[in-house]
Image 1: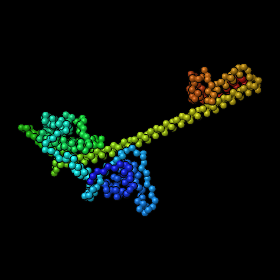
Image 2: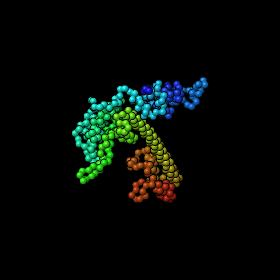
Image 3: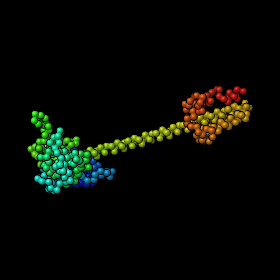
Image 4: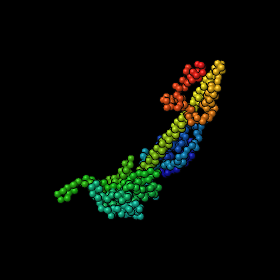
Length: 403
């Protein structure tokens, strides 16, 4: 098997050149895995019946590759080679493990001595050689993470083996393009920019320890090492039929698959929240438009009502003037009042908006809307308006027409 890198355009061309069932004979993928890749990269797939129509010589249409895409433009696939026929039933972990084992450049063998150790291993070695084993839950163990070194907790008898294993694993990770970080007493492998917490511990077991006539139970070291991925998967490798040194390819494959899984989850979460944010922006924009629409409508309604009220007042003034002329009662005082009234109407009229030194500080829209009826109020209420405009006891009718 070997790794093949295809661009998005090359994968699109491949999809429309031959059926998926034929493509899967070339690559280590299931039908659902292949389709997920195409969906993620926005590569259109032929509809059901496309290849039957094509083989029958019927006219078929090929969907174009959309330019509306900003994701990965390349994908790495495992290509089958001669002799890989028996790998069909292997899991993704087993396939990746075999790929790793086939790479002669990878340091998969733990040496018998430390050779040019990584700086993190040098710091851990200093801790293991200078600190004394602990008591209590760390009985007989030295914990390197206390000194912000790589997370190793072993007894002195296992320290050399632990250092050689971790040094080999670190070099293996770096060769594969990954990173390792130590932060706040924790150690992380960084794969695909995703952090995976790891730790190497010596297994312990309960045992009774005697000190003269006094006896106590302690978790004492067993000499067996355990490497653990301490995250959601919680995968652990322990010494057993095989030592963990002989499982480096499996450990590396699991770390890489875990990194890919975390990256995919991260991208899916990011995509989900981007879509949610877009929906929220659309909702807020729609609400903003609704509010503006309602505000504009209220302005229209208010102006229409004000205009209608000016018509009523103008008709009222004209009626008073006509009645006064008819009854020969249009004196100077009434003429002054009519002139004053028409100026106020022009001030109130939304089409005229005349200036008025005494009333310009008043809110015309709220002038007749449920104002306080108390004697301290300077504005009119709707009750006052109806009384002044339509009551049989209106001021001018009482003052002039009853004479």
